[in-house]
Image (cartoon, rainbow, N blue to C red; front, side, top):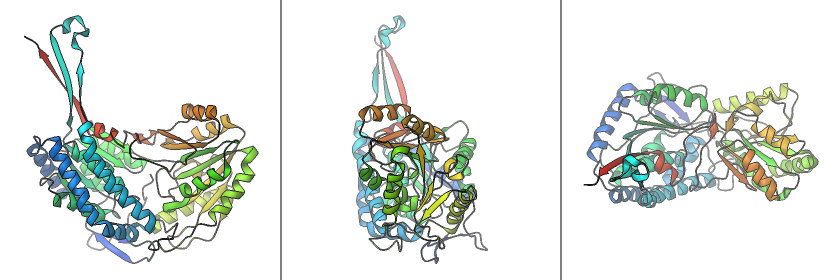
Length: 470
C-alpha cells in the first residue's frame, strides 16, 4: 500500500487539514499528539495490560462482542465519515463498515478455539517422567499503525484480535482516518473495555516512529507502504513486527479462460474504490492468442462504470483520497506516456477525480509495472503462454495477492505452485478477500498474516510449562 509522499496541508498552529476529496472543502483538522501523547498512551496501556492480565477469555470476548453492538448503532455515522473523509462511494463504505462489525463479532467467537498443546517430552530419554504443555499468552502493548483506504476495516483487523487475546492497543491512524479511529475506540470503551486498554494517538510519521521505538510497546503492526514498513521496523528494533505492505497484484488470463467472467470480475477489482486497495488489480497479463478480444471487452466494460459523487448509492468510482495522491498517479501516467505507451481513458482527470484508465503493454521499466499505483489505473500486458505469464507476474518485488483465470485444473495448480504471492485466487480477481483465510504477503509485501484464526496467533506467543511427575 502506497503512502502519501507529501504531508497534508498544515495550519499555522501545526494542525493538519483533511479535505473532502469530492467537494474540496475542509472536513476537519488533526492536532498531532507528539512524543508526549505517545509516551502517555504507552505508559497507560502498559499499566492497563498488567491490571487486566487475569481477565478470562470469556470476559474479553464479552467486551469485544459488546463493542460490535455499540458500533451497529454508529453505522450511518461511520459510513458518512468514510465518504466525506476519503471519498469512498456509499456502497463500498457501507460494505466496509458492515464487514468491520462482523469481523469484531467473529473475533469474539474465535477466541474460544485458541488453545495450546501437550508436548511429548518422553519422546527423548531425558524426558521420562516429565509432562509438558503450552498455552498462548499476549505480548503486552500493541501499536497499530493503520491506513486511510479502509479506515474501519483495516483498523479492526488489528485491534479486535489484539484486544480479544489480552493485549492493550494504541492506534495511530492515518490523518484521514483519525475521527473514525476515535469513534471506534470510543465504542470499545462504551462497551465496557477496561480503562487504558485502547488509545488513539493522532498525528503522522513522527508519532508512528515514536510509538514503534517506545520501550513499553511490544508489537508493532502496520498496514501501509513498504518504505514506511522499513522505517518502522528499524525504529522498533528487536520487537515483533507485523507488516501488510505494498502490492502490485498480477492477474493472469489464460487462453482457455471464460472471458466474460474474467472481465466481469477484473473490472471492479481494478477500479472500484478508485483502485485504492493493496490487492486491487494493477497488472493483467493475458495470453497473446486472446489478448485483443479480452482488451476490447475490458475497455468497453470500463466505460460503463459511473464516476461521480461518492454520496450517491449508484456511484462506482469517486475521487482518490487527496490532491497529493492524484498528482502521484498522474506522474506515473506521464511516465508511461513518455515511454510511448497506449493509454485508454473514458475522460480527463479533474482535481482528485481520475477516470478508469488502462495502459496497454507498458515496458518493464515503466513505473506502473514496477511500483504500486494505488489508483484507478491498470496495465494490460501480453504473454506468449502461461509460463511467460507467470514469469512476468513474478518480475516484481511485491507478492501480496494474485489470481489466474483458467478452466484447466492443471494450469490452476501450476499457478498456485509457481506464482510468488501470499495468496492466489483461481477464477476470482486479486481484490477478493475473505476474513477466514491467512492474508499477507511475501517479499516486499510484508510479514505476518491477518484473518481468523491466524491473527489470534500473531498477537500471542507460546509459553511452555514443564512438570516433573513425582
